[in-house]
Length: 559
Image (cartoon, rainbow, N blue to C red):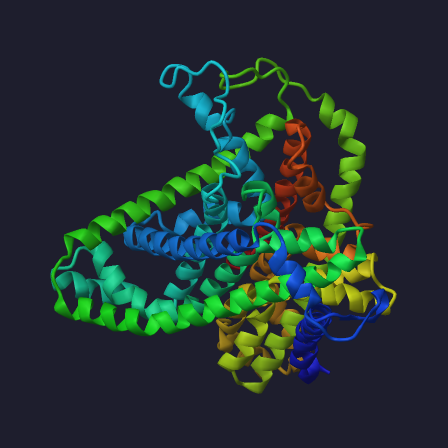
C-alpha cells in the first residue's frame, strides 16, 4: 500500500488539475453542453476581446505580475546578502513566519488600512507635515491606476516567502567557506554573497520563483482589494464573469481563464529563456572581479527596502487589530478616541461560526496532506532513492498553473459528481494546494533524520512499521506539526478554491473578508481580518508548544 502513496498523491493533484483544464478549455471554445454549448467556436474569444478595457487589463496583469516577481527576487536576494553574516539572521525566521502565516488577503486588507488617504501612514505625518486636517481628496493610494499599491501588496507576502526559501536552500551550500574565500579576495561580505553564494542557490529556488510569478500574474483576492477596479487585472474579470447570473458569460469567462493560463506559461518561458543571457552577463561580471560600488549600493538599498516591507507587513497586521476595536476615530488622530468591543460581542456568534468552518476545512486538508506526504517520504526512505526533478515539477504544478485557469473546470466536474457545494469538495480542492507546501516543508527534516538511530532500532529487532511509529514520528514531531501548520495556513488563505468548490454555499473567513473589503464598515473587515490571521498563528503556536509540553523531560526531542 505504501508503494502506491506517490501515485495516489500525484493523482490527487493532477487528475483534478487536468480535468479542470479540459473543463475550462472546452467552454472557452464554445463547448459546454449543460448550458447549450454543443459546437466548437470562437464566440467566447470575440466577446472577450471586444470587452471595454481588455487590452489595459492584460497590460496591467503582465506589468504588475512581472514587476512584483522581479522586485521580490531582487529584494529577497539583497536582504539575504546584507544579513548573511549577521548572527540575528536565523532569528528573523519567526518574524517572517508571522507574515507568511497571514493569508494574502489579510495582508492586502491591512496594507490598504495603512496607505489609504485616511490610513495610519497619512495620519503619522498629518497635520504637522502635510497640513491636512481632513483626508486628502483625489489622492489615489489604493487601487491606483498604475497598480503600484497592488504590486506593493504582493511584495508583502512574496519577499518573506523567497527569503525563507533562500535560507532553506542555503543549507545545501557551504556559505561560510565560500564567503570567506571571496572576502579573502577583497570582496565586501554582501557582494561576496551575491557573486559566490547566490549563483549556487538560484537553481534551487527557481521553482519557488515561478510559483511567485504564477501567483502575481493571477492573484484574485489581493487584486480585488488593491488593484484598479476599471479595468481590473484579467483574473478578476474572469472571476466576475464566472459569478455572473447570465450563464452565457461562462464562455468569455473561460476564454479569459485560458488567456490567463497562456500569459502565465508564456511569462515562465520568457523568464527561463532570459536566464541564459543574464547568466552569461553575470559570469562575465563575476570574473572581472573588483568591488563594484554601484552593485554594493543596490544591494544595500534592496536590503533596506526588504526590511521596510517586513516592518510594513507587521504594522498592517497591527492596523487591522486596532480597527476591529476602534470606536470614535477622527482624522488625523493616530489612535481612536475610544475603544469598543461591541462589534465583537454583536457579530461574534456568526463570525465565530464562519471561523469554525474555516478551521474544519483547514484541519481536514492539512491532515490529508500530512498523511500523503509522510507516506511518500517513508516510501522513498525504504526504497533508498530521492525523487527526480520531474516529480518535483509535478508536485509544484498546482502552484504554477493559475487557479482561475482550471478551477471552473473542477467545479463542472464536481457538479457532475454531485459534490459541488459540499465540505468534502472544498477540502479536496484545498488539498490540491496544501499538499505541495506540506511535502516541501517536511521533506528536508525527514531526509535529514539520523540513519544511525534507525539502524539501532532495526538491530534491536524493530520492523519498518514500528521504527516509523516509535522512532521516526516522535523524533520528527516538531517538523511534522510545523508542516501541518503551514498547510493549515495555506488552506485558510484560499479564496478562489472555496468560491468555486463551495458554490457560494461554503463561506470562510477569507471569502467573507474579500467580499466585504469594498464596504464601508472597516471595523467588521478588521475583525474578519484579525480572525483570518489568528487561525494560522494559533496553528503555528500549537506546533511550537506541543513538542515542548509532550517532551518536557526529554530536551533533545523538544527542540
